[in-house]
Amino acid sequence: MDVLMDDETTWNMYSRLFQKWLATGLAEEVRERIKTIAAMVPLRRAGEHMETLRERAWDVFRDTLYDEDWGTEPVFSFDLVDESAPHYAIPVFWIDGIMHPKSLRDISGSGIALDLAYAALAQEISWLKDDAYIACG
Image (tube, rainbow, N blue to C red; front, side, top):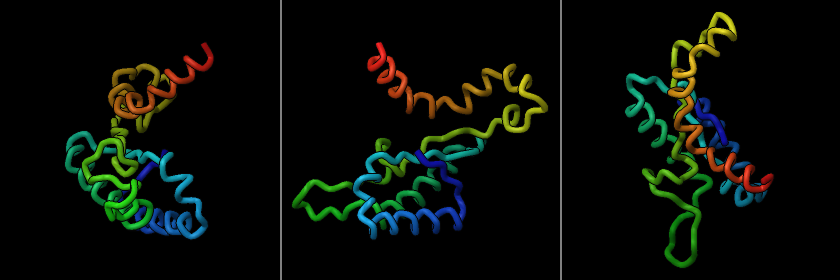
């Protein structure tokens, strides 16, 4: 998983990284294991923020890691709104109470805030826990 910040430097660096992976032949090994995470998503405008971020992420992935669909073979490519796509970022919300705590005790008392901030991420990666439990059980 990879954390995305929505600024020009970030997008340029991811584009360059993905191009390097393509040039070295690493892209096909790595691209199926990537899932982006959007950090510090503002609650008040989360929908707008996530839509913009996913569009920009899709542009970078489409231009680098996604295959062009020529209709002859299976391709590694996703639609802009495909929730299973690597570019379709998982939000981690900006919650004031957990972002600038005065002490660790303040964080431990804000379980609801933590649950809200990391709910989408926890749901997305819950399969890891299930797989680990099955493998260890």
